[in-house]
Structures are given as structure tokens and as C-alpha cells.
Length: 310
Image (cartoon, rainbow, N blue to C red; front, side, top):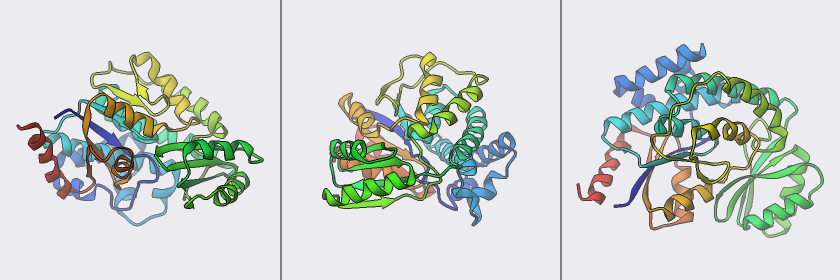
């Protein structure tokens, strides 16, 4: 077997009830939620487990999703699985930073709470995002450039799937142009603003003020940045990349292709939803993708040992 990667999904994957079965089954997972509540001043378990609207508001979504992801990570680690490298899609990169040893869970929760607040504030003027299915990324880029107003590519998820972002009217016009150009579907996303666009630059600057006070450890497990699609080679690069990440496109397909080229053939998606496994099937069907969002999914991690002959 080649390398094993731990992957973490981004905002939009959150669901009511995420990680609840882990919370009930593992003391280490309960400790994660207790820590998230302590660091954020919120009842994070209530936000994650009880039907509510806050879970879909950016200022609450980010701390809730990070608590769920790190709780599931602790259970994955208890199973004996270990990562050779790691990456996260947008917000999910903070989960990868925990795996890499750069940030502690407590530090991630403090940053995630403040990141959610500054991004919510930046979205006060509105904005929109939409998933574009079918066209190659180059055509989507060209249509964004030709569309009046501010509209950009936000995510390069996998072949035939990109996400656009920007001013609401400009995104609507781009969708019309993409429909005329033969897009299979353009699906508006339930988000509160134009994430991963230059319109979020001010939120990035505010995040930079937060990050000034955050200590970073050395990189112990290699990780890739979704800003560059490549490895981060020094901890001195990290804060700058996290600031840029807020307003830069997510190069997820490029991250996965780099991992695969370097011999990664098992990917463990940690967190709610199975979107990253779906992207991987579009990128390379020869790799193994294991999604862990429920306790019962932990049994699938035995495949890692089986594939390695252990």
C-alpha cells in the first residue's frame, strides 16, 4: 500500500446531529465538544445536535463543524489509523492543521469562532455561490471574466465540477451564460456570502489580526494548502496562506492530484457528508476513499490494514 491521507470537508457539509453518535460512544469525543464550548463560550453540542437555524449561520457553523470533525478525528485515531499526509477543503484545513501538529484543538476552536464572526460580518452586503456541473474549468473561468459585475471561480472540486462566487446579480448572469454554454446544471448554494472571492479580503485582514496571537507548532505530518494546491514546507508560510484562503479559490482537485502523484492511494474523509469521496471518484477511480461520518464507518478503516497486508 502507498500513503494514507486524512481529509476534512469544508463549510456546507454541516448537518444537525453531526458527530452525535461519536459524542455518545467515546469519552474523548465528549471532551472535544466540552473544549469547543469552553473556548468559544457557546454550547457547541446544542448547536450540533438539536434542530436549529444557527448551525447554518457562518458565525456558528465554523466552530460547530470543527468540533464535529476533531471529535471524529479522535475516534479515528483511537482505531489505530494514522495519516502520512493531510489536507482540508477551506475551513477543513484547520482539521488538517491539527493532524499536522501545527495547531492544538483549543487553538482551532478559538480561531474558528472568530473566523466565523468576521466572515459573517463581511457577508452583510450579500452575495451568492453556485456549483457548476459539466463544463471544464477553463470555460467557467472565461464566462466569469466576460460577465458584468464581480463573479469568480471559488472552488476547483474535480473534473466537471467547479463553484462560482460573487455578487448576487453577477452570479445569476453567469449562471444564465453557463446554461447557454451547455452546462448540465448550475445549483445555487445555501450560503450567506461570496466566499473565496476578493469580496472577502477584509475578512482575511481581520483574520490576520486574530492569527497574530496564535502560536504554531512545527509541521509533523505533511499537509497541502488549498490556496496553492501544494505542500506547505515551513510553518512561516501558514498564517499568510490562512489569510489568503478566505478570498482565494480552493484548488482541491490540484491538491488531490498532487497527493495521488506522490503515491497516496487511501483517503480517509473525516466529518459529515461524503462530498470529498465523491470528488475523488471523479479525479481517480483507482484510489480508495473511505468516509467516516458515523461510528459504524470506523469498521471500514480495517481496509487500511488489509490493503497494507498488516
